[in-house]
Amino acid sequence: MRPLAHRDFRMLFGAVVLSIFGAGMWAVVMVYTVIDAGGGPVELSVVAAANAIGLLVCAIPGGIAADRIPRRLLLRVVELLNLLAITSIAVAGTLGAVTVPHLAFVAFMLGAGAGFFFPAYSAILPRILPPAQLLAANGLEGAIRPALQQAAGPAAAGIIVAAVLAPAHAAWGVVAAHALALVLLLFVRPEPPAAAGEEHEAPEGVRGVLHDLREAVGFTVRTPWLLWTLLFATGWVLVFLGPEEVLLPFVTRERIGEDPRLFGFLLAIYGIGGVAGSIVVSSMKLPRRYLTVMIGVWGVSTLPFAVVGITHQYWVMALCLFLVGFGFSYGNVIWGTLLQRRVPRHMLGRISSLDFFVSLALMPLSMALAGPLAEVVPIEVIFIAAGVIPLILGVVAYLVAGMSKDEIAHPLDR
View 1 (cartoon, rainbow, N blue to C red):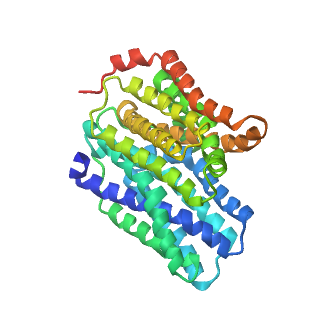
View 2 (cartoon, rainbow, N blue to C red):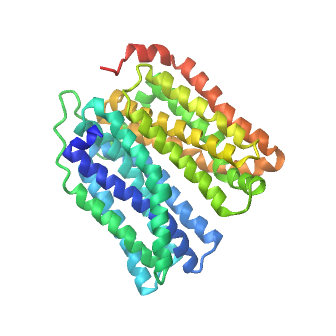
View 3 (spheres, rainbow, N blue to C red):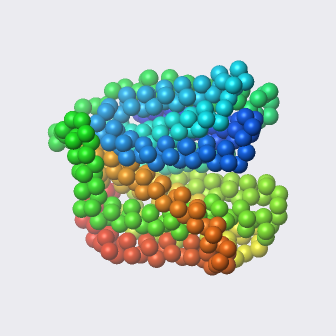
């Protein structure tokens, strides 16, 4: 909790909490507003795809902007645009004039906003917190994200949707969350001036943008631990996310029961594991062998997922998903801290956005492949592969990048 002693971090973190809570509410409001507007699965897919496209398209530009524009200003502008977008849905809902194209446009805007918001958030933290407190700060964010976005936000939205005349009326709750977030951002003070050697000098216009992108890609390629961690993450997304997002619901239904609450509880357990992992890692010092711990935890934590595809016991599935969530968030907190401590500040926004982009780029492909693959390959084999391959990829990345020598040469425990 030490980072909360800093006034600017309290304001910033409060805004992030409200923004994430609003995103969790929007996920439910969006679904029922699409249905209320006469839409079905196709229309819902269009709106969801618009959000994903906005996020994917704006991830890299968001990182470039975070290194060129004052982060405080960028966060305020994004939050203001989010507020205006959601307010347009709330007003249209009050007038009974919500349409699916309108919802798709707002979903795109919110996705684009996330593409700009989180690189700026990641880049501003090292400017307002001492290095020793970054792990705790990232742990706080890692703990509240699943708790609010996957649990509290959707639950609150469900209650509001059930209580109002039309689902779009519940958008006023999302409006309130983003309005309060914007107010808190207004109280974040200007960042301290950059130290000597940290200034970002680059050409203006298109040449400048291309220069920034080349610089970030060049730094990534020349930095083995960074490059191979991103490659590992790409492979992890490809082999793991599809089975988790697409096949797990059907496995639960066929082996445990058709009650939707059974699957919902599994997702909640997965999220609780993530909260626990974030809290545990952030309560300790950064490990001396930080790369070994990060890659090791990520690789080992997917092994229980192989059991999920084999077992018919509900409690075993729940325990395994808790362990997967725990390890995923544990490694993520270390990863975010490494970016903030080992990447030059003047390109932290761009590197964070590259990480963001890589994490998203193969997600649609993984989900698209999972269903057809299950038609020709036994489910058990797919889950075993999804559980074991990340460990193999982690070992390869660790050895090829020489992570053991790298972490010894670059201690972060002092």
